[in-house]
Image 1: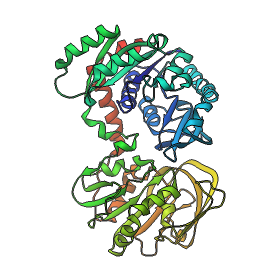
Image 2: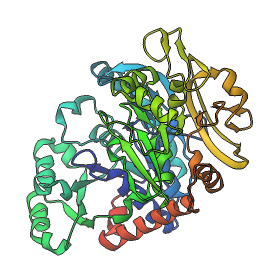
Image 3: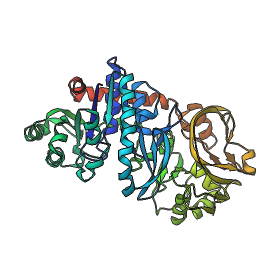
Image 4: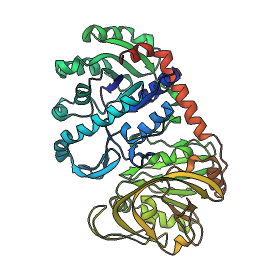
Length: 476
């Protein structure tokens, strides 16, 4: 087993991006590399070649390694459905729902699956680069931890601790982590790095030496802010971004359980349109040309949320003005006339009236459809993936949005409301150009090539500012 783990002093310190960059840097050294995250919490999921789902960040890291995503790369995925509960995915498959308190009792069972997945990856590759979750300093969670030191100790994986100087207090972040964790956990940490520095890194020389002196850990470097981070898919909804271009105004409703929101990344990269992530409580702007109702982990819950914002009234007015509407996955289901959930697969059993912009009805079923697809839409090649519960049918399905190869989605009689179960469809340049042309907007090709170029640039950035060779040698 040869592995190294990047843990963070907190959430959103840049662990996912650091691992992606290190994966690409190590792969360029001729190593067979795989990413691994024992436990992830995200509604932004990817469908894997072996028919399961993992966090989207691990799919990006797999891409950095030149690999197809596999369920072993993220054996435990938690998909929040409420403020206190989540669907639990183990090795790509849903095994049930759990409230936060109940989930702690599941962890001993889940650790076995985590270690099995890690063992398979370790046997198949020269190097595994592991990403922690949250922070090892959350010592109240340590007794049954499977995401940070609980995993590192069980698997014998050395750790490098990343701090985030952009949020301030990085000296306290790193020194304080050592102060609160127990001696056995601290012994797993081989060094630290400082991430997201703005300005001249030499101004932090004294602080860097202070951390080394206080902790006894070696430093691997100070990473300046990576300005091209926006070119890579974001994992967390808090990182959703708008773009400030001119032309067509595309508005996406920021639902409370928004899922697979990287569908929007190719649109955010288009210079010929302006993308707005509409926050709760804000009205849909009158100049919107296209409103997107995105995917969600809880269709019925977010339909109620949408109505609570008054967006149902705004959508109807937008449509009356001649505007276009696109619903993706759960958003597609909301656009129909009725959602029937006889078994409570999406929450409480019963029927809920939809938005009525498409003449379709959805019946929720417990089985989740997980598949990658290719086909055509608008006369252009399209590829993507489906990850949903529910089956949708009705008169508007006679005008399918795509053939992949079976008919997918529905289009209203006036052609201005479209629904589809396909995620990732905008990544295809030809389709995206055809879709935007119907709305009077031009498109710039090369989105997918841009993601790979950004991964190379990220690896170059880390090589320039970290002692990557020494960091990777920790694993040996």
